[in-house]
Amino acid sequence: SQTIHQWPATLVQPVGSPLSLECTVEGTSNPNLYWYRQAAGRGLQLLFYSVGIGQISSEVPQNLSASRPQDRQFILSSKKLLLSDSGFYLCAWTPGGAGKMNTEAFFGQGTRLTVV
Amino acid sequence: AQKVTQAQTEISVVEKEDVTLDCVYETRDTTYYLFWYKQPPSGELVFLIRRNSFDEQNEISGRYSWNFQKSTSSFNFTITASQVVDSAVYFCALSEDFTGFQKLVFGTGTRLLVSP
Image (tube, rainbow over all chains, first blue to last red; front, top):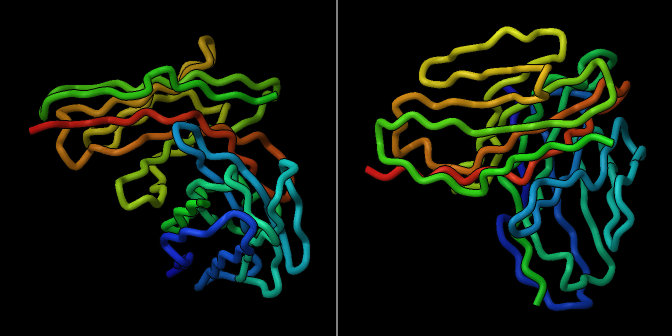
């Protein structure tokens, strides 16, 4: 069966420090991968998606970047965190391939990031 | 542009009451997909249902039921005989028929509190 791992679960970082959040998927190949952010009192917003290794697309301009060094690994990074980067970050995957992208998305357990 | 509105920020009910969570969406596409996800206190999103724009049949799954009405652009979710375990944040989401990846547009969520 497929599983998705996301870590760390919580993180408190000072302003200006770097960030690296990691997400890995097991039990499937060539998934589409996503990073979402949930700010306090708001819905989830898509930040990045990837349809393959090294292929990253950004949905909103921001202080963050994403990378996909391996098929089932998705990393969210920042060189210098801002207070506004605080939030709940969720990694997700959907099956890759034509016609499959609108099946259900599978989400990780999230990382709660507090920038102080 | 797509938009999902969940006007109810928080609903409190007593166990065994029925409760309906409202969802109104906006899209210009004729082909789209609607989803409901549950976010328990642990944080991960749990898939509940997917409905495509060509299938307006209502669906029932145990205590859960969904009412999709294209005429009013609504996709409401009803929990019958609510239980304490139903306490969570519920998100409605919309995905258009892009090729290659899924872009979920979420509502801001409705927090449901079921008290014993």
